[in-house]
Image 1 (cartoon, rainbow, N blue to C red):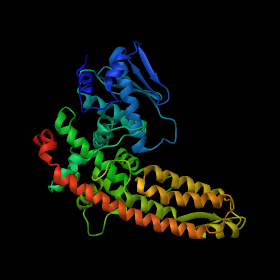
Image 2: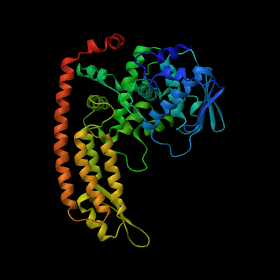
Image 3: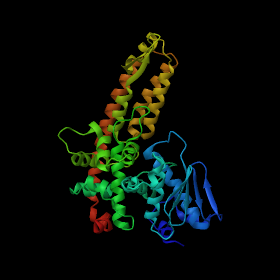
Image 4: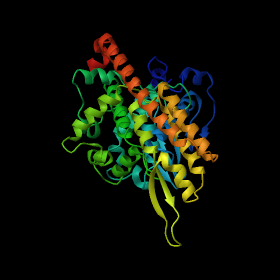
Length: 405
């Protein structure tokens, strides 16, 4: 059995639950296929079954980071040979190999899943292929594939405690080093720590204000810029945009954001992030009817939504859409914030049924309660983080990481 399958069975590598279940249920076939993610594996037995399961798990993580594609993806065909990628029409055959470490196999699968989302088709075989400059993205996503804890279907949750312990001792990696000098998966311990920092970097990049409708996720924006020829550090800086202070270097911004993000896993979002998202939803963008040739775009405060809907005879379904967006926040928010968010949802649902009386009062009450619970949640988080940092030392938890570092 190839060494990377053996390593998938040891504690610490969480690959689609447990690979031993896949081994016992291995299918014997020359070709394995998943039409939902447009991936085929050429091979048979345990190796092919495990590779398909790895691709399915990796596609979940890639979709979480890069978003749902806006057009059908090319079909990927993975083979167990170690050959260069070859394109045939809308299909690309990628040689993955067999006798390689699990991290190296995962990196190759993830990189192929990323590249098929990027134009042009020559990204697999260009003289300076973007794959060489996207290794930091692939490493970060690979860490999520191998080490995230899954409580439900979809992307898992990553514990950034190893990184936070290093940050607390003042040890930050160079941002330029993470982007421009990737660690090879062959160096397994060092690659694990490198890929953890890359996953944290992807989370930092994605943790800004919510995107406008139709705007791609920040990680996908960065990948497209890199694929078009931009150096990774320049692409990253462009995606950060005005989130950085004028007197702050990119490295300083990264250290500030990385420390904050390292205090949580991927879910739930921090209370302060949820509050920022609510502030954004409270400014409601509307298209008002104009003359025969043009309409007017405007933004109104949430409390004034009933008056605006009535004044311009607008469809009340906009209130249901807003309620749906608040419901999405409930799924991401800490439990203390659920009740005030439910107040917003209840007020909007009443408005969608034409019940406008007391809407503004309900919104103000929900806002006041939300702000109080955010403050309480931050106090609880600060207390538990302090206990964790005081009682758990880096040497106790991560001796192998620190030896590699």
